[in-house]
Image (tube, rainbow, N blue to C red; front, side, top):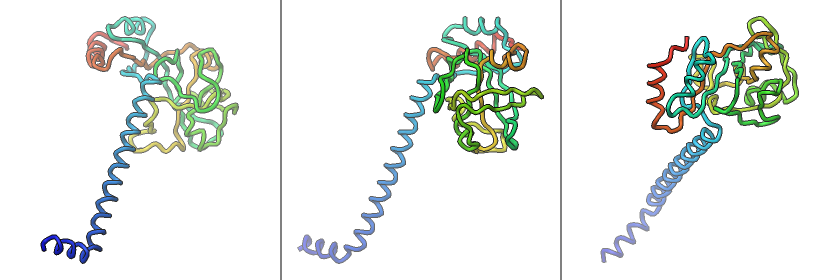
Amino acid sequence: MLRRKLYRDLWHYKGQFFTIFLMVFIGMLAFSGIHGYMDGMDESAKEYYKEYNLQDLWITNTNVSDSDLNDLKSLDHVRDVNRALVLNAKLKGYKDVTLETNVLEENTISKMYVIKGEKYASNKKGLWFDSYLAEYLNIHVGDTLKLDVSGQTLKLKVKGLVNTPDHVYFVKDSTEIFPTHQNYGFVYMSAQTFSDAMHMDVTYNKAYVDVDKKNNVSSVKKEIQRDFNLA
């Protein structure tokens, strides 16, 4: 008797029952999809950072000297150290475009992922350009660009369009929340290219540190802060 009443009530309220079931089903489907998408992005990011060797620590100073470099490399748990000169330049011929210009001694840490063009090498003359900004500005491999660096003009050919793991989130200043990829980007070039174009030696103001294991990052950081005067 109760079973027949149950079936009768279910049939009577079938519209409401189906509507609730459909809402719950869609909600669970959306949650599962978003959760799976975020997990996938997280795993992809971890693989990208690992393959292209995102730096564990970075040091900013007016001059990271040769002796500083050797001392940093001799620290326990430090696997490698790269130096760079990082400064802003204006892209001539384009309205209000600023480029973070990275002058590299070598590129074994935070390595470039080449979208188009040639693989980076320190003995190649030219520059490697932010792929997202290049798409917006319609810049291609083989184009010759002019950079205004401290009043001097560097005329260099684009050898490749690249992304790098330390520029995944990259904004001009604190007034921006998300990257626009319209008037601010980055370029890379070798120290030799910069020296030849500017007729001066490179003074490095950045050091990128690769630590052997994640749980050693904190101890290496404390040792650098305690023992090194990089001024």
